[in-house]
Length: 444
Image (tube, rainbow, N blue to C red; front, side, top):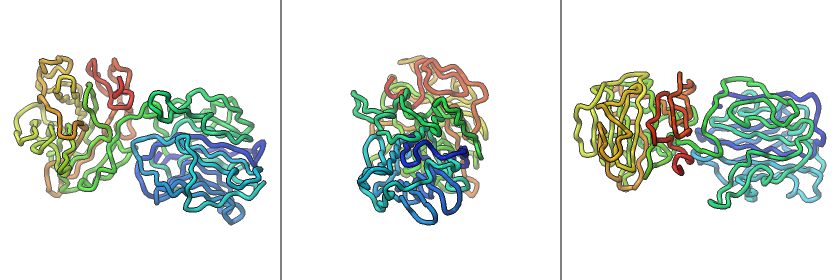
């Protein structure tokens, strides 16, 4: 949603302007910079927002007639780009106690520690349930959200608790989504982004939204199945720039360090695809990397805890510096597949759907045509990774990782391959027994 906004203008204020509830799930992409998730806007002196501040605090405010009648900014920082947050703002301005009027919940827990805590006056009219234009992903003309949103509910006339929209998993103890919600929406209530990127209201009110700018992209990543992304927090040495919900990145000139997935693998069989859109001077390396307890500054191949397939000559590189002939060279817009079998400890690479070295990822313990037999890294976990191995002025690389969302950047796969696991969408056939790197995949 980095330049995307959803919008709808309502013709009248809500059934009860003093009572309303927002509930939605959000996954952050990049940090920093004000990023609006929800907003209501009439003019510069009448508007309201639910947003992440540039300081990564969560703030809810209503700016009414030129002054803040509500402003609640958390002390807590929201810097996790790997998980979905469930945010509920429940409001009832008729309450006698100020602390009972506007309540903010994150993953089912009420926020109680605030850097700013200005509550609505009792029976204060407000922007959120008025006849203003409602926005998601922006406040209307800026502060775009870099991330994803799902299951957006707005309730007109009732202040609901978060337990109407989520619940605690009895096995894991984690907060999880309720996909079948039973609430009374009220006249101006709505439910959008229920499944995929539909802005058609699912509440029965026909309060449909439109895409007011940008492109609304469907993602397989959702609150019930969190897919891997690249890890923008692990970027001190790489100094890469990330985009598209941290599935794409550009490394900097003279950066040897690797970008890595935010989910690691210790057992099972996993598959991902990578399109290199800027190959630099050809020393692009794609593969896997394990965290080192002493250093994570190194790139792929020729360094401890890493195995790679290089673009320029199609060579493979192991963790002790061996650089030998392996497969075809690859260039810009080729799609490299990586299959890692951690039940038998082998790694395989494909180019545009063809397994290199006549590899057979389904060969099990024989490891037919595998690039390498691998051992457990020092950290115990492998991560999908990409890097370059040059410090020339033309060494910049750009990658687009498809961890199963079905997209390279903002472009959908052209013709999805088969996937027996039914977990993830890829350009080419996923070897039988392999799955996408996601929370569901890790628990298959």
